[in-house]
Image (cartoon, rainbow, N blue to C red):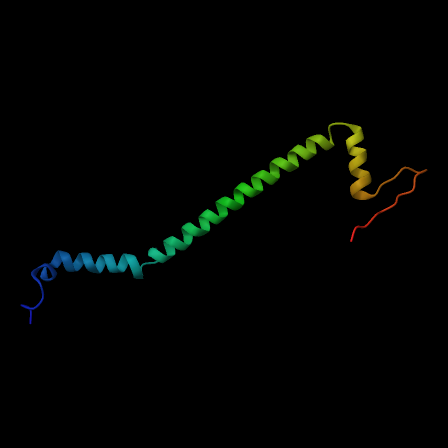
Length: 96
C-alpha cells in the first residue's frame, strides 16, 4: 500500500507543508477569499475617500467665495433661503 504513494508524499515535511498550505488557503480566518474581499473593500473605501476629499475642497472654495464679500453672501441668502429686503417681493420659479 505505501509503495503506491510516491516517495515525495511520504516525506513528513511535505505532508506538514501541504497541511499548512491547505489550512492557510482555505480554513484560516485570514484565508485567500477573505483577503481578496478585504482588499476589494479597501479599494472601494479609498475611491470613496478621494471623492469626499474633492467635495471638501469644493465646499471650502465655495465657503471662501461666499464669505469673501458682502454681495456674494447676500446672493447666497436670497437664492438658498429666499430672504428678501422689506420692500421687495420674491418670486420662486419651479422648473418641471
